Length: 302
Length: 289
Image (cartoon, chains in turn purple, yellow):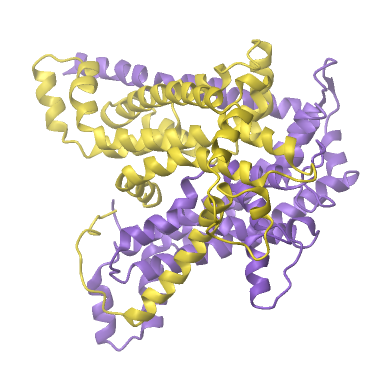
């Protein structure tokens, strides 16, 4: 038995070797390098020079664009994540009514999630066109004059939030699977005890699907903070560098990072920005986990 | 997590009457489908039709040449070939590496296994931006900017979500199969190849589908690593075409929409063919306890 065990151990390391090397080369190594680079001033043309915490100081004290991007991102996340979660949950609850043609509706709601982001962004760019777009045409038909959407400083971010709601299909499927795992007896028992639909939803359904809800919230948060492509493709003028307009209303953190790194080649500064982003995501994820421990209900055992 | 979802039972709490339910679902479906319908309609109109007030969903004449025009503008087939090439290699790399690693994590005992697996899962939460700049410099140092290596090579080193999915599936395969094969003198690799892989086909298909869709749609990778116009992928090409024509006075929306339709098509077809696998894979991702 012992030689077999020994063999297994080495075989085990051999099998997971691709990931181990991948982790060192593509994750751990670059992470350490990124942290070091964030303490330097480096334009790729000249050798890096150590500047200590200067990048971080400048980001928070001398860079209004960074603060703007931080605010834009927080605004986007605070609006899109709760709305998307509610919509996904709503759709899943509707489809959990033993609906005829369930798979057709599920397909319709999920379809936007498999489509190409750039193609979708171009499509929505036209959907949001103030004069000829789908939304303002529809609003016009009922006598409402729609806003300028992406061309308006105050409506550009809400426009991107609306567009993000089109992609709730993934969360919906997760919620639907979770809802279908709620034992029916619980509802029956509660009903016998005289609990109404709302009370049963709050006290049975919600706790039972809380792991899925929690997972989807965390993933939504992580994804939301990394919003990039929509803003890159849909905003700004034809001029390169104008992405994130109008007046930087859709300059999100990752977009700003991209511009600093790959348009201005300020690698040190951009790395500092990346670490701030990482730090925010980490803190929020941990905080959510902390809060989650209180309200997420896990079944005992596996 | 228990999987009793297949037991069909009547739902007692009927919040909505059934006709109201279908009305709501129908309206929501229209909202979700309208942008697609709009895109299809615009893609076969002429520019005058695009700017018509009120918009006509069904044009008098269908301009199919929009599609031909966008294929020559992009160059579509060249980009499609590039994208397919990258996607196929990423598929091979992902399936190979993730199944090997998942086998190691699910079947073999070794020191630090649980810790390493937890580490692997935790990297799923890591925003790519943290590693992006050093990786870019690393690939630049190797002279790999404007090549496909940075887009393809990492796939051969496993990806945490797919490792997780495959591991979960491998755990459902009875261990007795392995034991029997071991007694017959089969090596661990042999068991992986001849027993586990064939049995895990459904899970491998799910991973392949996700990988295909993800790579086909990838924008950020091609955007930072590819410079020459003739090396672009479809997604990058469409974005470049958009920046060339936008704001030029009369943006050819009908041509752009035709391009958008063509790029979306493979994923939509794949999704329709393999809906079940998609749904299962996504649900599995969300239901881990």
